[in-house]
Length: 60
Image (cartoon, rainbow, N blue to C red; front, side, top):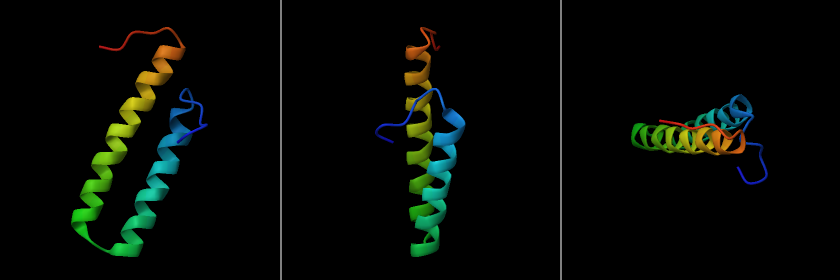
């Protein structure tokens, strides 16, 4: 996600979803899929916080 604009949350979430689909297709393992979803959630939340910071907004 380096170099991506954190205010473009939809684009970043779509890239991460595509990444998850690729991992699931390659490995076909539920444990990897679950771990990847958790990683995507954490990254998405981090991107949201970064975008809020750039826009001088507070997050709860």
